[in-house]
Image 1: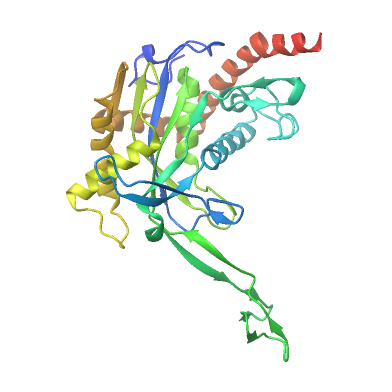
Image 2 (image 1 turned 60 degrees about the vertical axis):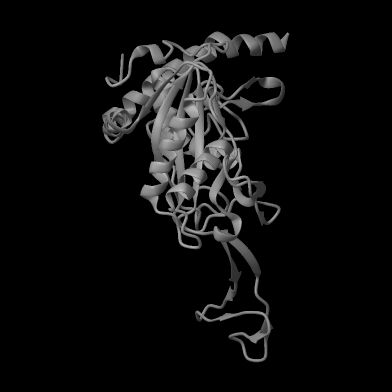
Length: 335
């Protein structure tokens, strides 16, 4: 049963293939911070020293959003939906503990369980980089220790209790709101249901990075989808091309935040230019073509019947794949 009317069937497989078949769906995503998230390793924000643009050869430091910081929150949103609509029971599949091996999350995003089996992820996500430089994209906060009466004390100050001196807990760098991370999420060998499953996860995910229950609000704005017979440009090169576009247009207004409309326009112009340089067969859905697809996807996923139909089809395909391929691997490993 076809769930989409705006896309041709030629972009999708009828079932999840076991071997790579050379079909790719690339989701062109711009991740926009809306609070003060933390993308860090060992207590420090992740950053990289790279060239500012493709044309601009100066070197700057950029914030980095590692691939696991992106893919893990999105697959957890999908797992939550599968449990909500009864396709996965909590005791059947526990993330990073005991995978069920036969549901859409496990088959699409992959798993590894020692000798019990593994499945390579069909979702490819690479490190994303901020458009703006590190110095313009973060600030340092001092975290204080609160007392029950609502007062706080920092280092060298007397606290709420007479005669006692407390010290501040810590200082922590946070990413500022309205920092933009262009990111291409690639789905290899999509079926229609797996395409919609990943699409929906990207649209629904709202929190990324550390302390996701308290901060880390991020909004994903999709500007297009590219169907191709190979992988396309990297996140870094796309980000550098966007930087060049915005610099040429005079819309890099440091230290003020970037304007979202300016970023979206530069992102579309940059990807069109970069795709013209590619040596692959590709179909680019941007502007009105993508808007039609986005409206249809939102209409489908906004109703309980629609999301249930999507998940049911994805679950059917995942279980058929698991029975046909993972079952054989598990039996072979047991011999």
